[in-house]
Length: 166
Image (tube, rainbow, N blue to C red; front, side):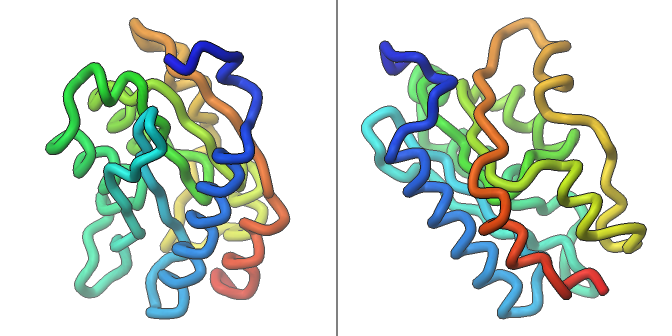
């Protein structure tokens, strides 16, 4: 992949996470759940962008930002390119999104807000029935390794959620 320790976040990783957090805030500002994701190739070119579109009445509960970005990237990148790509997310990928990341062959995930912190912020809100299952545990059950880095910038990422789930 990058030829360096992929578990150590880089300046580019933080830059992409800042963009995800800004996109999550944009999603909130237009009335959507505050989540966003990017898939970025080894050359730092953005392959896909996703924002959550799961809210009723027009949304689809499977349209999480990470799933959208992973699916879009898989349409335009080769399996080798995806294996060297990183999915950045404003929040830790849920079980469904972790499955999409695994099945599309993306090799690395960097996220801001942890699933545990998200659960603390959302509480028992029925619009986000969070499963307390870290993406690392989902990926650990697979047949290929996916490098996971996070949580990073957690306080910054939490800001888009404060007051949203009340």
